[in-house]
Length: 383
Image (cartoon, rainbow, N blue to C red):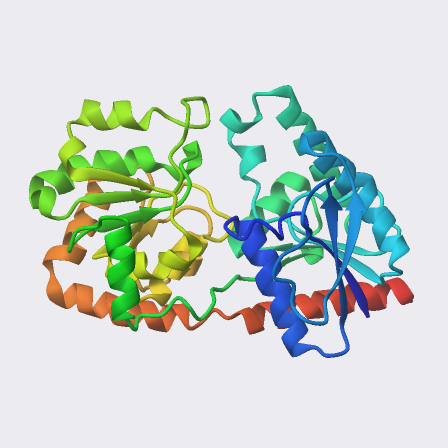
């Protein structure tokens, strides 16, 4: 079987779609020797091509223009045309951006429906048009893969896709996320970001649905209880402007009077993330909507106590290994955070169960289940 993969996000390994594409392709290549894989990517004048491509995986450029229009052109015409040019048997689009028409059977991964279901994200005409386009393409796909059972339910309900055409396949994390400390590396990372001996960590995006404002409200209780000895560290790229999608975080922090208890450290290099997780007292992920919730699994794999929410897919990831509170319950979120810090026995138990829970997820399992989808779609097309 010859598999063509849309590699639009390949050179963005810090994005969820980029991590998914790289990890899936790498694992498939390691596990299945007779699977031919070609990465098809949008070639813009002057770019350096794809980076860190596994040995034996072929690369095919589809020339396109830069920007949003170039992305749409690549998805709708460049990628399907390249599938024909390389004589692929089946196509996989590993994010919600499949073509309306495909010359070969196609599998599309729809991680979640956040851009469709959060009103603030679809106020602009361009966003509504793109949502309509990718929704139509998903309905025309031969099969849909999604990251969780929660996302499958929403896809079936809102995209009106038959339940048998949607497969929930959980994601995983790589072996760099582990509880064993690397003392010299960890020390260097902590010094790099000027982190204190004790801290609670949030690492993720700052879009509205990430619900960071509820975490900040929770910190009015945590700060009073623990003071500035356990600051909240906000990691990840800080929004450059305020909009419907990005609240005024600095203004809200000032309004709540928690400036002494909260620190921004900004963008975190991918290789530094395990050290940040390992050395945190607790990892908090207050999101309202996730297709999966990779940061939660990353923290669990590092043996860090986790406080997250009961929204969408997050209970599937955290299981019984952490706290899952109502995303609107700031007081409950605060209570869970405080408990993981002041109750030593609880923290010890959570660290142990976190690693056990994380071990239930593996890229090998993800790859095997994905390969079963490919086989089913491919065999159906030949009948």
